[in-house]
Every structure is written in C-alpha cells, then in structure tokens.
Image 1: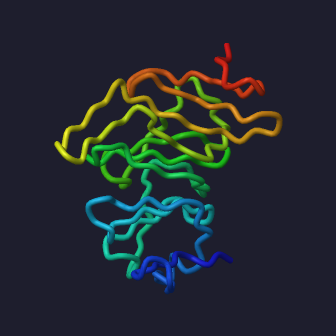
Image 2 (image 1 turned 30 degrees about the vertical axis):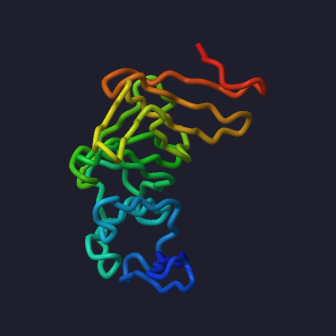
Length: 178
C-alpha cells in the first residue's frame, strides 16, 4: 500500500501526514499545488487516479469524471494563469485535459499513441512577469514526456487546439517523428 501525502509547514524541517482514509493508502506520483491557495492540492496517484483536497489534506475526494476506469495517474500540471485548466498524464492511457479544476476530464491525445505512459507535463513558452502581473503566451504548447522501452519521445501541441506532434531523442537532441 502507499504512504499518502505528507506536508511541511516549516520549510521541510519536519513532515506530517496530510491524509484521510482515502489518501493514506495512495501511491502518489505527482502533486500540483495551487499557487494562490496552498490548501488546494491535486495528487496524481497510481491507486486512485486523481485526488483533490481543498483543505490542505484534511479530506480528499476522487476527481476525475471522464478518466478511464482504474486510471493510474503519473503526472499532473496546471496551465498558467490558473483558470481551471489542468492536464493529467496516465499510465498506458495517454493525456487528459480538464477545464473545471479536475472535476471532469476529456482525452487530449490527437496524434499521440493512445497507450502512452505520460510521465511529465510541461509548458515551455509561458512567461509571467511578477512585477507587472502581465501574462504572455507565445504560443502556449503542451509538452508530454512519454516513457517507452526503447526511447523517450516528447509529444508537443503547438496550441491548445492543435494535434500533438511526436519528437524522439536520437542522442543529438529531440527530432520530429513522422
């Protein structure tokens, strides 16, 4: 069984469980903490899919209407500037997108292997200027790192509405795959 989620309130000097009976057995793969509200957390788990808390871990609920049954969540990320758009990477089930803070999910895999193991999600072209509170998106692709037995391809969408293109590591860098 898993160990659940642990939380530190003193910069990592000490840790305490932040679990209820549901999350205490979770195999947590990734956490997403809302930057404006640290009590709001999403946990990608290989045992319960996506778990959500709004009270800093005192209580957790399964989020994820629309995810495959028994989904094994491996990675989770929120798209800046934090307006409810999240992505979750699944083990052998690809990438899913939510526009309601993780309450419901839809596949986001056009062009991606539907059996992909998504192990990381990244937004490379997002810039936030804290001095001016100015958000710049130029464009705003989504990158998904896929674990594969022979190579680790990267899938990239050029924008939120475009198909995902595959890149693979050829030891000289990532090159497009046709």
